[in-house]
Length: 88
Image (cartoon, rainbow, N blue to C red):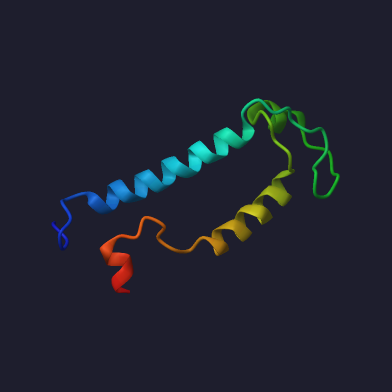
């Protein structure tokens, strides 16, 4: 189904591009860094399986979830500026 001046699937492409941008940003921030043994926010130990699964991890699960929740609330806008987002 075409929407306005966009082609079929444009909304899906925009969502996928946003997800890929965030994944790339996250990977770059972790690349080449060493995992911490204790959370940088609460000083609780970070379990070895978490450090092995996520190289460069700096926070425990609880603190990371809290940080991501804050980031989501700050970025609730369409940064690609599509026509549809500007009409709302």
